[in-house]
Image (cartoon, rainbow, N blue to C red; front, top):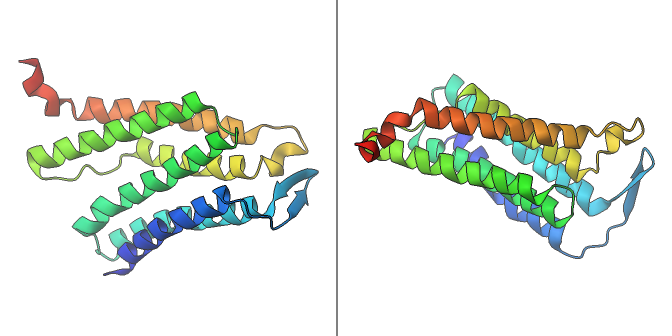
Length: 194
């Protein structure tokens, strides 16, 4: 197994660690930062999420630059991203830190695009690469999640709802990139409209 694939597997392993730290009733104390109190478990889980997010950036760059792109990587990398992001958004809804309707739209888009990817592979054997709007979507999701997990601590003192702003920027790119993927690949459905 090459390094990019090891990073992807590591990201997948971090998902249940992140989830357990967020949902188990652990009491490791509190941290006060900029007048905001955050449970230590939430800070640790945020660090785990951030590390997992960085592996997403690293595995793709390494795979492309060193010509280590594999079918496993093409399959597992986007799956790991979706699993990480969906898990975090479910936790955020549980914490009342993200609106459930926003998370529902994000999850529906992820499932729809995953289905589209499967159809494309079935029709022509090629894995649909992520386009720029999809990459922006992933980046804004991960940034929004980090700030939502930290209760917007860095911007709370100046009363800027950065986490919420990033969540709605993310929502825009979720919708835009989802529509873009379907428009760009509409020929996959041509047999259904004969």
